[in-house]
Length: 264
Length: 247
Image 1: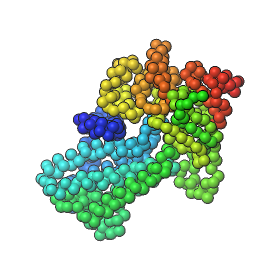
Image 2 (image 1 turned 180 degrees about the vertical axis):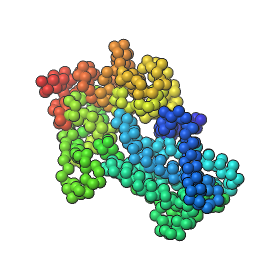
Image 3 (image 1 turned 60 degrees about the vertical axis):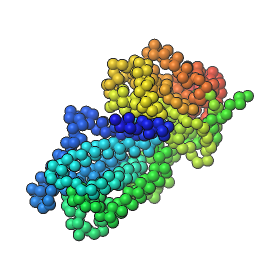
Image 4 (image 1 turned 90 degrees about the vertical axis):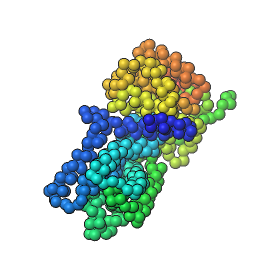
């Protein structure tokens, strides 16, 4: 169906670039579940099971008090998973797509666009489950949920920039894979996914400006489960952070993309 | 004297690589060698190349493994940059084709046709129109939905060739494009199509170890040896010179 939507746009632009990005994204997404018996079912099952594990640990082992804790977790975790999957994939993108870079000349920027889009397809499954579960739990979304697409777009910007920056650094330092694992782990536990963002900021107020995901997680809960508008200061800051990240990534990309083949 | 315009020009073309030991690609060695980065060894992959390719010309490049042939193609297509001081000019859309490599082994033949077709500039609509022709030409009707990793080298080559003949560009760079393309019947079929499709006033640069191919199709040939341009001339003379160089 999406092919049919893209075809006339591509024809108007007299370019098959959109189609190519879409095809590469689709292929990326499918490949993740290619050899699994349950196939695409894992796209739905994986986040649900993960949330179930965290829910049991925090609700029953640590007795963390928070209404609708499952939804609370879900609202933050799916956005974080989008970011982490994108950036970790970015680290290996040139190696995974070497067959296209080496043999047929492909625009390497398209590899990043398609990678983020591929992750976004998986994210849509998670988002659909989240909204269904939220409504089943009796939380009906307000008009403020209309801010959600802009939050997702913000995460896409951060993910795109992050993936590209890591991919370029990875050309020169293999160790970045291990270093990023540690940074991501720190980011995960401090992003306010498990705890109220307000509690984290009470102890570490500087985190508000150091960790863009605090704002994103906070605002994601605001616009979905609490029916409130985003916290504007964090919303604005996150967008600026996303745009700066993409700008840095583009500068790095144009300075180093011709080194990709040499370094692979 | 030919009045055709020059579409590729390389003057004083150099390409050097910094040789980095594997051990230096981690932070520990980087810190240890932080003040000794200048000790990185440099080697010249291409040295002082000077040549031009004219519109509609078929230009061959021969040389042993490691002579710089693929690096040259990568520089021409823009995947790598010539060193500073080199003068390089190219006009028109350039496409590099090599056989049997541009496939994702985990995807089916069908998926790879769409991915590769799209990368070489075809729209989905166009790929849909020629899909049956590609499959029929490659003779892979029964295997088109199997993963490419289950294909033999010959099957991959046939499929890639069948896709590549639909590519559209002003200049084609063929990197070992003629290596082992199927059985005798397929070779004849592919040769006919190649003659009709590519030898039709298109500009081609052919890199091949197959000297028969070089002699048959090229108007001029360049010999590369350890990144240096040994000679440029008529195919027959260059093939003889190339053979003599390594005798």
